[in-house]
Every structure is written in C-alpha cells, then in structure tokens.
Image 1 (tube, one colour):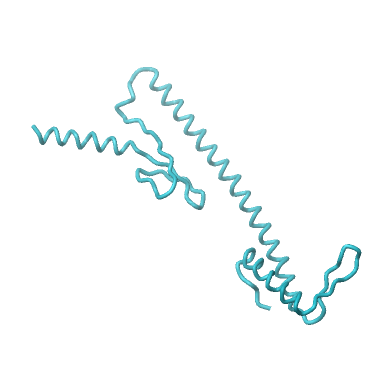
Image 2 (cartoon, one colour; image 1 turned 120 degrees about the horizontal axis):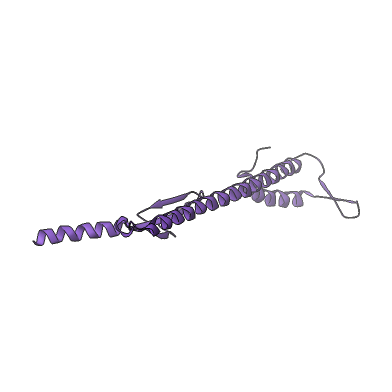
Amino acid sequence: MRLLLLCLLLILLANAAADQVYRWTDARGQVHYGTQPPQGEAEKILMRSPQAVSNDGKSEDARAQMRQRLLDSYQHERELKKKDKAKMAKEKRRKNLRCKQLTRHWKNLHHYGPIYYQNEVGGRKFLNEKERQVEKEVLKNDLRKYCGKVPEV
C-alpha cells in the first residue's frame, strides 16, 4: 500500500515538474525554451497539463485562441529579430566606414613630411613631432575600438 502511494506521489511530482517551461534569449538573440532555466533572466511559461483540457465545445475555441496567440507571438518575435538584424547590419557598416577613415588617417600620420589640418578660416595648422605622437596615441585607441587592431604601416 505504501509503495503504491509512493509511486502515485512520484508520478504527480513528475507531472508538476514537467509543466515548468522557461523561455530565454541568448547573446546572439536566439530564443530558447527548456525545463531548466539558464543563469540569468528567464521567463517562466505556465503550461497546462493535458488533463486540464475538457472535451466541451469551449476547449476547441480556447485552443484555437491559444494557437493564434502563439502564432502572433512568433510573428512578433520574427519582426523584432528582423529589426535587430537590420540595426546590427547598419551599425556594422558604420563601424567599417569609421575603421577605413581611421586607417587612412593612421597612414597619413606615418607619412614622411608635414602633416596639417585645415582650420575654420581656410588656414593650415601644421603638427609638430610631439603633436603627431599624441595624435597617433589617440588614434591607436580608436583603431582598436573600430577595427580591432592597429594596422601596420
């Protein structure tokens, strides 16, 4: 008798544990579902057990509504991913353009000869050797940020 009661209790606990489903998004933006939540934030999704669905006419409508909400949710997630992907592509193009500009400036700073900047009134401001070295150090940090490395000259 005790064994039967213990088995029944274990089956009920297993069903209760199986009803816990978590949803999370990883660093690459992919949505995952699972019974074990990862470290960090995960949204708990309430799942109905199969016994909770009755055979009356309302359950079909409820399932149809739930299915539609799920499809709408998936569509919304796809649209968000598409927007994020477009935003990331735009950011990558901007970063690549900035990298090219900085690389061109880096090569100009290593050119033998005078380096100057045009001022507001059209005059030239020539860099001395100390100013050139300071400019190179500042440019190194920007090159690492936008290009990932400092190019060889």
